[in-house]
Length: 285
Image 1 (cartoon, rainbow, N blue to C red):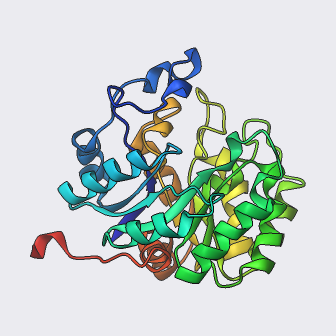
Image 2: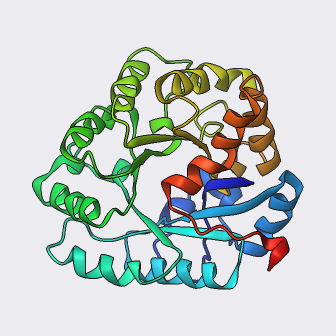
């Protein structure tokens, strides 16, 4: 079973902050994306399940995403948002945990002006709450934040964490040095995983090719191994640089030399394990 471990939905007439979409850079994806738009891509690529990931720092969006998951069987899990820096974050987390498709938490650390945001005492307290409840955490940050993953790995050995988009290395510029060392340092902690996602939007949007991504995928595989890497499309953000089909085809090509078992782990079973997804065969429903 192929599982897309990272995709989004947004609806521009909802009262959320979509200001980042209303820029010339993002105009091609500045419109509503809902399950009906994604379904044909999933069918075409043989993807049976997805993990739906938050884009907003508010509780209302997580409620909306969980409703979408209720109404769409292909959504196996929702990575929502909790204000981890607040003293009552545990109360909200417990409410989310009552929903069977709530599978994790993410905070968009890359947008925080303080580069040390994720290691502030109040945020670390929130991560401890996640660890105590065994709720996975998605690490969304840039390469300059990657060093903090080592501290998090040391402080929270029982917290499942996954690095989104390989921490967004500068693929367009072909920069690997420095990033590769930090990624390997993070990979030393067995509870930290890596999503092979979001790569084409870090490459040359108009001229990228799978070969441009290869050094980064190979570095991630060398660091984490096929047991701790997972496929994610980052749809519809990926539409800035290519189609859902191009993303799927590129990754399948880049891991084609792995064994069939290793490919299956990256394309599905690792995500199912990491997020504790309750997978039911759609054909049997």
